[in-house]
Length: 80
Image 1 (cartoon, rainbow, N blue to C red):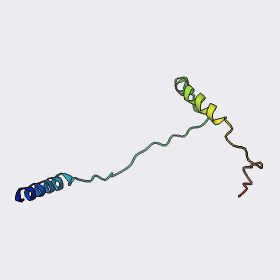
Image 2: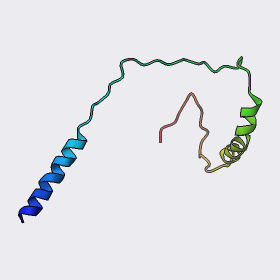
Image 3: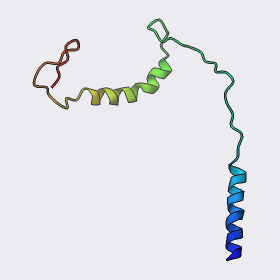
Image 4: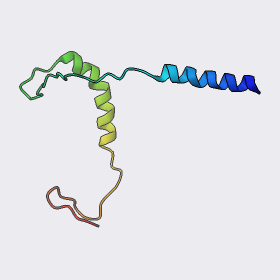
């Protein structure tokens, strides 16, 4: 009985000892802001890499999954 209490206390102290860690906070954050526009040159390697994924996404995006009873317009949404 006493041995089990000692073992339990030992494990609790062991966990408490290794759970105490130093917490690091960032002092500053640096980033670069890149604008993606039509003026940027296109990389043919990247286009060839993404082509199979783009083809499969475009195929599934063109499937009709439902039909609305009325015409939906961008500037005039209808609430049901």
